[in-house]
Length: 177
Image 1: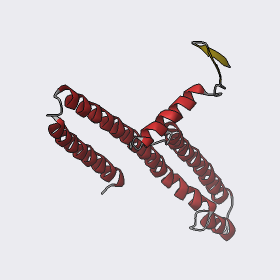
Image 2 (image 1 turned 60 degrees about the horizontal axis):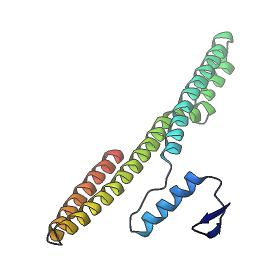
Image 3 (image 1 turned 45 degrees about the vertical axis):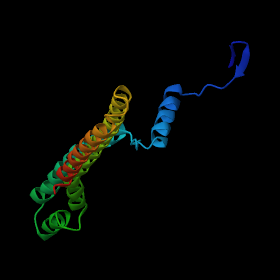
Image 4 (image 1 turned 30 degrees about the horizontal axis):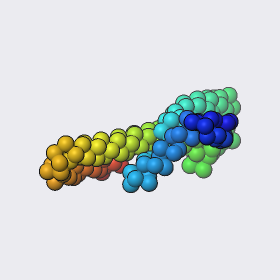
């Protein structure tokens, strides 16, 4: 694409995804300025949590079907063989036991992904808070001619400590500590 700006000719290529390009450049700029912006996509984490929840429901349906089949085997047949088959299918080494274990772990995995998504959102809020505190500190120093710089630095340190404490508490709550 060619541009003419005040008589100067410019030629550049526009990216295929301008929004993604700008987002990437803003994150790069924030990282360059010393802010650690989390780039993890929370939508993906939430999607994975939903997939684990749906896996749990599907596995429970499979287990119900399998249990019904085992009950049919024992109720429709007599003797030691159907009882042995049912015992094997309900045993520790069976596929049913493996599916039960995965079904029991699925809600935990879903909750872990939701917790990670929440943590990423909290870290983003933390970075935004840092940027706002820095902007307020700079504005206060400019307005007061530098006299409030020490006070604004102390306020920023106190706010940063409170934010860090809140994040630590959230992490401890997620981990159950």
